[in-house]
Length: 329
Ligand code: TYM
Image 1 (tube, rainbow, N blue to C red):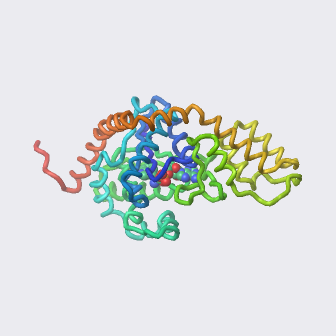
Image 2: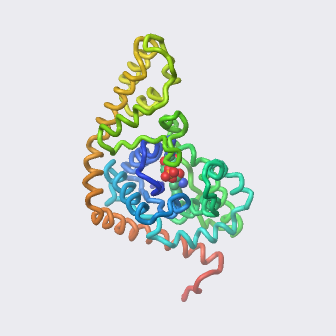
Image 3: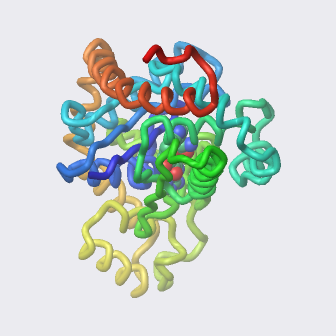
């Protein structure tokens, strides 16, 4: 049995990059009955960038509704809110005493965010330690993530190994990243990595008109309609092939290469593909968003189950580190 774990921050409504890069591959893995899956909403991580509490609550609902609408079997597995298990904060402290300061200084994601954001807080800096705690607390074997999280996963592995080595015992399971090479980094409307913080995302749960508007905003080159075009240079094509069938993607590539086919045509096909591919999920998502009590019930059930795993790990950690009460034998 493999334990699969991954998290999505509640920093907005999950976008197409989150869906294709992390959520859908994770749900696919969870369908294997031999696996045991823990998927969670990283609301503590989202405080690094989002400060408003009401916004966070809505975003937590949106992330939970996304997991459920896309078919995650939360009864067989666990879907929970990170902050419902404050045990993760205790573990973060222990781990931070084992993480070398330069390792955090060299994190690409921190460098990238600190260049772009005006609020460069300590939480952004220690973000990978909380993420490591998320993973190690639940003895995860496999962590499906997008490519941007690869370095964070390496830090989690290094930290687990460092603690195990120090205490000469297997305190933690050493996790492995699972990055879907077909998807890797989903481009945003400006051709850069799709990201909530860059404002270049596509939200597939909106109504079709709004999707059309976001797709219309995809940046394309200034070539004329008649000119043959290299599909590999078109963000519209790159997104289309991620959501359409292989045949439809090949057909679009051929039309681009033949000429007489413009980016406007491709955008219309992409809009249609996005609207159709997510139609059932969109309906379920909207039902759930109108019923937050149902979401809360599902998350509470997930937290209860996850706690049983987390408590055992924390007992092992406290025992080797000599914290907490002595166990009465
Ligand atoms: P977040 O919310 O920023 O991203 C969630 C997941 O979506 C993937 N992703 C993408 N994949 C492909 N193309 C894109 N443009 C794209 N944008 C985002 C991310 O790689 C990620 O897998 N730090 C995590 C949240 C987290 C976590 C964890 C994940 C917290 N604790 C423990 C795994 C295990 C993050 O990036 O969230």
